[in-house]
Image 1 (cartoon, rainbow, N blue to C red):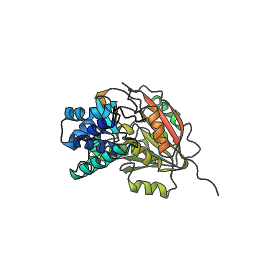
Image 2: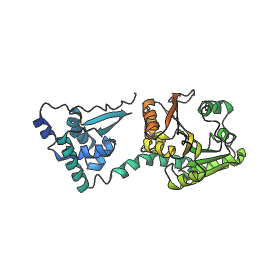
Image 3: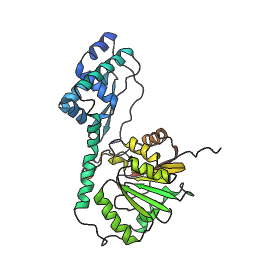
Image 4: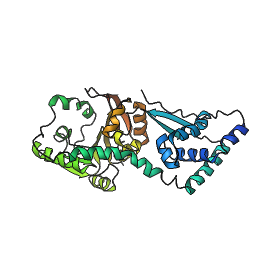
Length: 331
C-alpha cells in the first residue's frame, strides 16, 4: 500500500453557508480542527489528546473530511489527519475559537509530547538490542565488501569534499569502514548509548583512527556548534534514520543545517510499504514517497541532486535521495 499524498487544494464541500455554520457549531469539531492544524496527527494521537475513543474521533472527524477541511492519509494501518483551512473568514474564526478551546483544556499544549512519544518504541527497541549482550570484538568483522558496495552510489556526487562527514544514526557503525578512508574526520552520532558502545568496540577492532562517537540526536545544539566550529560538514548521511523520527521533516532540516556550503545531505530510506511488522523494530513511518523527500530537501534550503532506487537486497525496497547546500557566494 502506497501512502496517499495530500491534496493541497482546499475546496469546501458544503451546499450552503448555513451548512458550514452548522458544521462548525460543534466544540469537539473545533478542537479537532485546531489540533490538526497544529500538526499532522494520527487518530490514536487525537484520541489521547481529547480523551476519546478512536471510533469517536473517526466519527467526529468524518464530517470535516467530507467538507474538505481535514485531509487524511494512510501509513500502513494508521490514519493521519491534517487541517487545510484556506482563507474563508468563517473557517478562520472557527479555528481561532478551536485553538482557544484547546488551550483551555490543555490539549494544544500536549501535542508536542504526544508527537515525541512516536519515538519511544524506537528507543526501547534499540536499547533492548544493546542490552542483550555486552560490547564485544568477537563479531566485529566489517560487513562483506559485496554488502558495502551497494552503498557506493551514494558517494558518487559527494567528492571532492573530504574533510568531515557526519553519520547520523550510525547504530553499530556498519557504514563507517566505507566513510573512514574517504574523509579526514567522521563524527558518528546515535542517541542509543548501547548501540554506540557496540559501535566503539567494532571501530576499535577495525582500526579506524578518525572516527569520533557522539551520543545525541541530529538536532542537538551541541552537535551543531561542534560541526559549525569546523566549518560545516562535507557530507551528512542519514541511512535508514528518518522512518524512526517523530517528525522526519524536522530531522532532515536539522541535518541540512550541519552542512557547509557545497556539502551534501544523503538520505537512504524505504519506499512506501505496508509491512506493519516493521513497527516492532521501532519504525514510526512505513516509508516515504520520493516526492515527499525531495520536497523536504527543498524546504530545508537544499538543491535536490538525485532521487533514485538503491540497488539492494533489503526489503522493503530502499531509495537514495541527495541534496546539496548552495555554496556561499564569493565576494
